[in-house]
Length: 69
Image 1 (cartoon, rainbow, N blue to C red):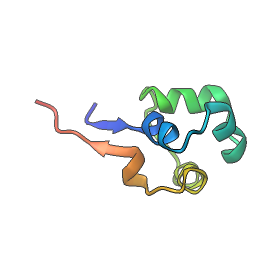
Image 2: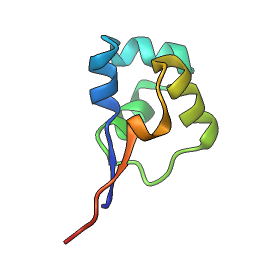
Image 3: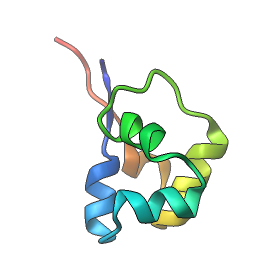
Image 4: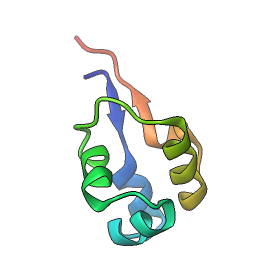
């Protein structure tokens, strides 16, 4: 998939655990884990906004487009 999710990178930079992020964005651990591992097929803008607010980052810090070859 050409969209890469760098959620784990941002969480490491902010020294935030999945449990802590889950509490801050009010999302289940399983849903955050699916997003973190890149297995998610979609993300709501409200969820992306909450994650960006909790991690103090921009959407481009979390989502990256990588062209397939």
